[in-house]
Length: 398
Ligand SMILES: [Zn+2]
Image 1: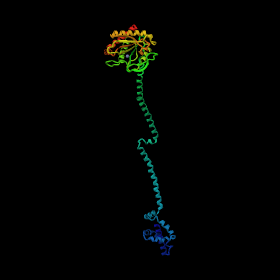
Image 2: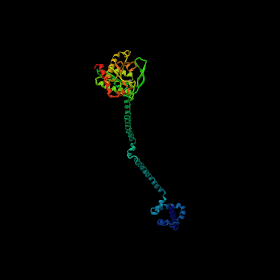
Image 3: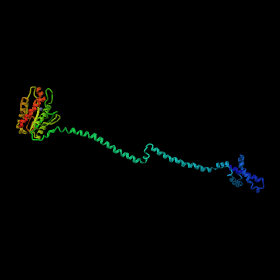
Image 4: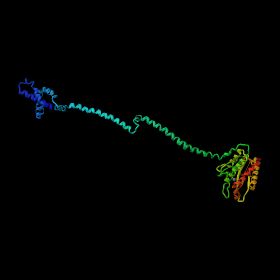
């Protein structure tokens, strides 16, 4: 706007000069000094009204405009500032500068991802390499713990827990079947007479029935409970076993081969089975040790053997009879006990099923307190053992 104002003022001055002097031609060169006064008038505030008048004189002012333009460089500071302010277009490129700043803004944006990278590194200090290797590195630790975990897990539970209890269970199971068929089933090798010793009864009776004799319809308990000490209550099976073990030792000491039907109380061997042990071993003598039960005054030793007419083992009657009488005689001689003789019996299944020479020895009466005490006396037990061993020696002629 100030430009127009200046132009208008210039036009007015030109018109005034042209109107005041008719010598327009001579003053053609004189216009320049007038122009030099423009800066002073430019500052006059009242020129605004004049500007409006000069607007209608556009045609005449055109040549003047060129002059003013020429004068612009002459116009110093104030003019330059005005021009700059009036040039909105020129400022537009300045506006582009902020646009240039936008890429600068992108720079911080570019830095932002960089900032995110350190942020990613923070959670895991190793992650600078980790983000890219995240997949392989993560797979490796999985593979490592997997084999490591199953290996310790598998051996630990399997080896100590299962292996230990399993062998422990069969171990007790193994000895259990061993007693029923006594480990002594196999007789010792040798040519010496084989004596099978059967300690009568066992810790617990077996009331199951079995034929009393081969082909017989009559049955009997597999193992009876036996008698007991009238004063101590001790089981007959215990006394029988105690003396039988001593007899075994004595016979072995004398060079016999000995086969025991049982060596402990905790067994379950029927009377037929005991006879079969002696039969299968081919025993030369089968001695069954028992204790008797009568009344408080009963005393003495007796022996039972099969009948001579037994269909099953009558052929061994002579040997069994002689064996029984010989052993009984020596026992009574050594112990001083009354000799109650040898009795042929048919109600002992252990005798009926035996095919080897044998006898059932009733070593004394547990119903007699005095005899019970003797049966429990180790010294008297040794006398019984010596008598039986001496009888076997006599029987076998040793
Ligand atoms: Zn008995």
